[in-house]
Image 1 (cartoon, helix red, strand yellow):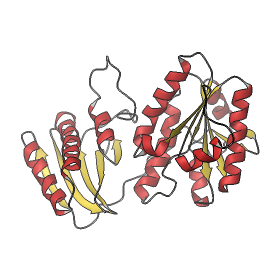
Image 2 (tube, rainbow, N blue to C red):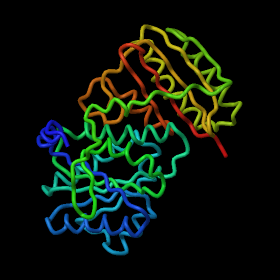
Image 3 (tube, rainbow, N blue to C red):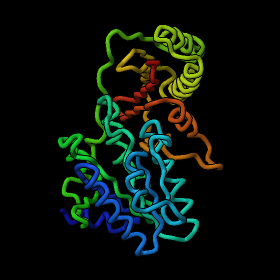
Image 4 (tube, rainbow, N blue to C red):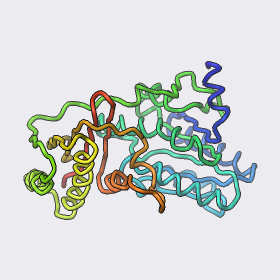
Length: 316
């Protein structure tokens, strides 16, 4: 491990570890050891894992004032919501004055698309930015290598540390800059519809989306949510992206995808992923978009502008 990485980690109160395991027995052994270490040190523990994994741990350590279980499949439909959830959980525990540990395994172990895989990896890397200046706490991320061994190296590049056999070592693959984490979007699926919009075209834009939604039997409530999210993104394009943008719509792997492209640059990669404060001016639109959609992909560079994709699951 390079000395520069070790130095950069020394000043951070946030400790982010990857725990590779194979099967339920290794999951239970590694996470129970982590929980017991916390209890021995009088630390609070938040176990945010899918319910089937939580049931394995509850059989050994039941929920109490020190150990809290959270079903991640109920909290977040996609990775873009998890950072804000961790903010709230940590805030509750820190306010009680105790050190905090967390165990976080996403409910997207069997991801269905390249988009979901990329967003989960990007979420893990963004965690390092989100909590770099926050309260000190320790997050262990179990990852089942039996599901996808080839992705383990990519996940290791998102985690500064790796836990093996109860010991923690620095990850030789971790890159604080991580340009790889910002993967390019895949090409739109053919056929797709395209619509150039500018000021005064929001009603027409919503009509275009509605026509596509009707074609794919999207229910009325979900269409209203998509309309609201699309309006937020398109309005940002007009205000901050050169006064215009391009909408593309298509169906992909059981989802309706609405893509917005403009010439603007979104400088902050955590935009929309962290809960807005009561005094915050602006920045609430992308937060709302993440709450309304089933997956949100955002790519923005000074040279290529901004692309935002909104995914909405279709019936059946």
